[in-house]
Length: 153
Image 1 (cartoon, rainbow, N blue to C red):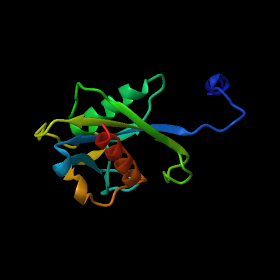
Image 2 (image 1 turned 30 degrees about the horizontal axis):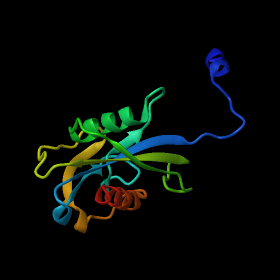
Image 3 (image 1 turned 90 degrees about the vertical axis):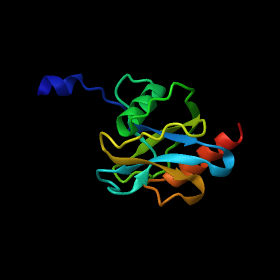
Image 4 (image 1 turned 180 degrees about the horizontal axis):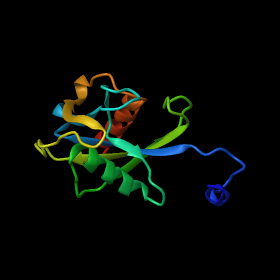
């Protein structure tokens, strides 16, 4: 055990955990929908959230976004994942200091209906953007920023 501890890097400054979240939209602007997952685990078990999760060591950000989206919803779009922003306000995650990188994906109308919760997501459902339920973490802010990004394109 001591050998393992000796090999672990130490830093002068604390490091945050890094997560990646993806806002996936479909449909025309007047009837746009957002894909949400119902959290199956704490924190915020049972609440709706954007699909996402923790970055693995040596994993590129977009790869993490695609992996988490596929694991939690079964959705694997081939199109572009656009970087919307990064969020790291203190207290945004009750588990500790966490910075998330937000991606957005815009799909055409009617694409795909067959999503299902997987991994740590109890379910995955398309929600009308105009009628979003309360969201976990700071995901309401993330969803609105992603929606503004999609609307501006």
